[in-house]
Length: 197
Image (cartoon, rainbow, N blue to C red; front, side, top):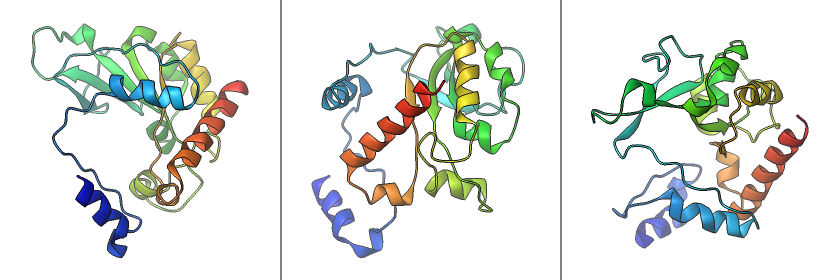
């Protein structure tokens, strides 16, 4: 793992590329989030458990509530285990996919809060680039783009959801920045958006 990190950091051909590297360790967010929270003088929330067989299914292929989900929603469901009933399915709510699809956001308010597992936020600037290119390299922190982030969050709030907000940004420029500066910027942007609601 260390050799790979050194190779990525020192090889000019690796510049502006993202790498997913695993050494086989069993990574758990419940172990990492408290450390991140401590760094920012925050209290970590309690873990929210789901079946260990969980996986994500594109929302336009499978409806969780008996009807087609709004764009930007994905199911989080068990693969086959009997304990994963259709009524136990959870949703991930992605602002980016809702925005890039340019659909009305008011369907979000109809989703029961207990069906939403997590809400992920990312923004983007007006661009002629294909959505997949924006998604992989040019997302922005909440409030830095032209997306109706406040409207999206107001609709989420109407559901009664009070769980985690996650900033999911893939940006080639941010990858070159100091990680702590980038994390602080993410926190500042997200806090600013929330305070403006």
